[in-house]
Image (tube, rainbow, N blue to C red):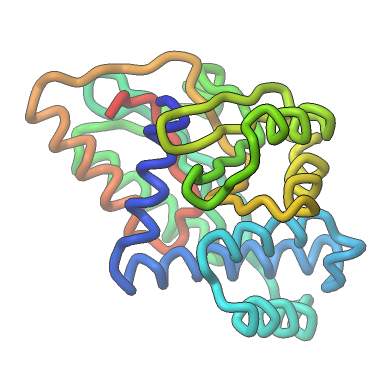
Length: 242
């Protein structure tokens, strides 16, 4: 999946209806709660919280909603009991799928994830069965329409801050980093006033699978739609070349 394809998906998600936007806000709210629990409510002293706040802003979450989430989490640290779990499996024609969840009920989440795979003709595998096909990277996407900086200058800012790679697509720029360098690169771009359409740690496939059978495509979309509708699911990564 090129940066252009990923960027198009992000734009599509941001243009979705209010229900989808509510799901995104729920995901980010839980990430705020975990970040506050692990590192405290002060973004200046909590890089993970800074990263989540940046993600929230790139998804158009209002500042007062972000601040309320931080205050609520700070006053409720002892009761934040979300647990991270990762599920790996296969969709139709061997498409690799990774599902990251954040839940207060592991049994419920496990049942829902298994059900999503089953209804789309997929199957859950063992831990590590597909993650080796992906590289964990920091990924920052910048909308060309929102950024009037010269591409060479933008690239130098990113590379000087520690980015591994900078690529230009038809309507966006993509910056890739090692996970440990992500925060520093994101903050360097933010300091320069560069608007980011997306900034997150993600899993990037090493290779992609093409689907030509309509039934396989419909089944895979069913799996992805069911996972997308589940509030416990934070992120879904796959190697389907859409």
